[in-house]
Length: 258
Image (cartoon, rainbow, N blue to C red; front, top):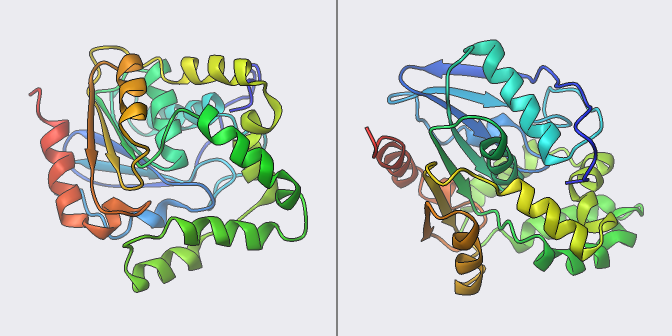
């Protein structure tokens, strides 16, 4: 989040679409691309739209990278592919922020956020501490260390697959993290509040691996009353550690109100 004005024109995102059923959008994490979702097959129950976020995969590398802009890109892609269709939006890591920003601005049936804490004020000091390395030649090393610290129970083969598809781009990472680097705590709190302004009637599921704890859950519930919060495997990638469970849970959650 950069707090930048909403003046950037939405980009046409690289994407693929398959399956049949309600439209479900998958949004990947930072430095990754839509192939990160390969082990998760939801096409038996949903029409699945997978996107490469701006600055990732085959999509253009073009600033800005704030959540409002990234969400607008996803919405423009949804409208280009299935005009007028209200999707279910699923995001992992950075994608969880984008999915939440999407739901705060556009109609959605439900949101699923995989292991992305939204209380960014808690993360601000840590990111600021990393700033010198983020802007140094050690940037790729630092990114690698960050992902290693979050691997947890992720199997070795899956960890290797994700490592191969990641493309760390300094300008993108700095752009996505810029609110924590450039905003005051008060400004960041306002930005977060705007991002988590999900309508009360939108079902919102968190599947956490690296659980921030009960204080965070209560903070989030105070902002998103429809919250369902679950803790799965101890990893940043709980959906890839238990893909079959994840597929079943998405189907159950997304169709609960039908």
